[in-house]
Length: 435
Image (cartoon, rainbow, N blue to C red; front, top):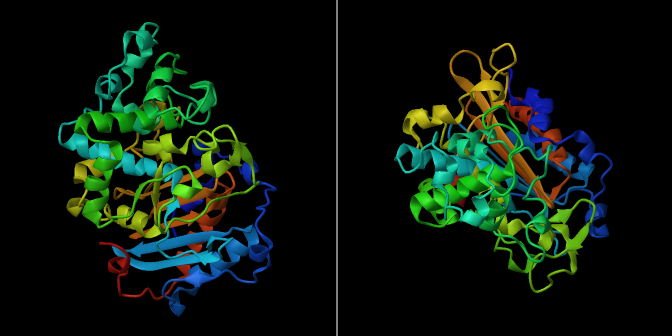
């Protein structure tokens, strides 16, 4: 395969701030029944011609001691592969179904970006107008009396590109530190926004790229104001429903509240933390189930979906002139290089890879083609969604996490496995799982 996102492992880690050392030496402490299994169970249609994909996932789960995973692949708009591997619930020995629901973490950002671009097409949002003028509940005086004046320069487009002025390496990520915002319980997105309005920015808006969950939380608020609907209500109706995707939704933080068909999440270090939620607020709970403020992740990382759902979403942009979600102009904006240092080297030449509107992008050749991708990880889950310039899209989901190490490791292997397949099936499986 020619230059593509598989050649960007270092780039992806750099852009997402996920050093390989985060995943080094981690051991998933699973029940002995899972560790002793010689081969993980596999669900979905078997096809001998697709053995390179089966072989990769089987070996990867065993080598990495991953409890469960799901992989879906589309080719030229058809779902040609959808299988589940390992266990959705180790304790119950429940296999992962091909359409099992997983927390997709920051793969939620492309979904949010598409909703924003839709509203911009309709004139409901202005990409280059201040975000403060377009979010829910304009801040009260107590929140803005010491407002950093640079806040007035932050636009919707800055938030899409991660150039809004927030740098979690320079200060902190408010998403990851809820107790800085409220002493007890879980702060809502609006409380997080109110808190950040009282803090200075880390750099001049537009000056550079710095990955920001908070910027996408603002985009969720802008969607709500523009539509007079809840963020997830709009997205489900206008992003997912046109694709036949009916089960994607915002996830819930507690194990007891997981949705039908949703996997169970396993922290790689079996860590505990004080719960942010009733009925066990303040008591030690597994990190994926109440110790993180998952209920507030929403527009930046709160969705659950299947690998099939994500591949259907990615396939919506295969034919820019006939996309069910966006115009060709909006799709071009989605993968266009940002202005300034975020999209260009010091000598003014375009970067080989950059963050567009909701996706990492690597242009390929001179015909306007590109590979686009996004990964994500939170306690208990990792996700990777890739759009290739040659008509392939794939999504892989895990129900454990190692600081993006799993998706970084499997990414080039998946490209190689796809390239190794010589005979792709002619049928499409989307109708088996969607609608």
